[in-house]
Length: 240
Image 1 (cartoon, rainbow, N blue to C red):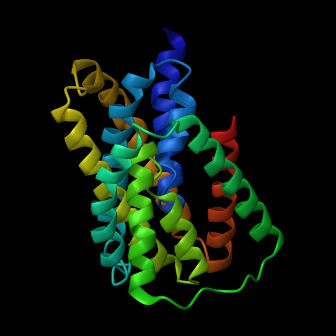
Image 2: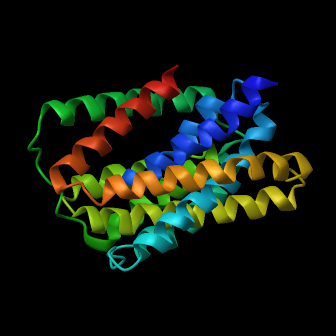
């Protein structure tokens, strides 16, 4: 199938490009592309496996320049939140939930793109950071959206791009690793997943290289605008 040969690595390339530039957004990007050629049950393990490699490449490439000092409250609380999100899958309609998140992202991205100098959130300290991490973990377990809330929060904190990526990129990597373990335990990782994953590897390598090259040339203002623009696009993707 020509579409499959094009769209599977094409989605992986776009996801790796986005992660290379801003550090998140891979799950929604590849899902929006792969839904045209793959069943949802095939997409989930492939999203997690490819995302694991994408984030690992970026972290290995940038680990000396990123600031991980603010990560731990997010990571610890997020790990506790993932099982809660998995449990909520039984009682919440994921489609309604995704629509609500999509509306929020569109409104948030559009508002802060129009308003270039928003007020910053400085209160709450590590306790507030941990609460945001827990929400991210719940969203990851519920709908695979673990990086969105920490990404929004890091921006509202006014942290540098190195501090922001030092939070949400390893956070998403850890959530992907947990999800892959659960999927493998449940028997959802199979030979077809492996074949599709191998198709994605060259595109992941190319997209990651290009995205990281772009990231190295971004100042703080451009990085913020790109993050907001990506959040807006991801919100529209969820609504569609």
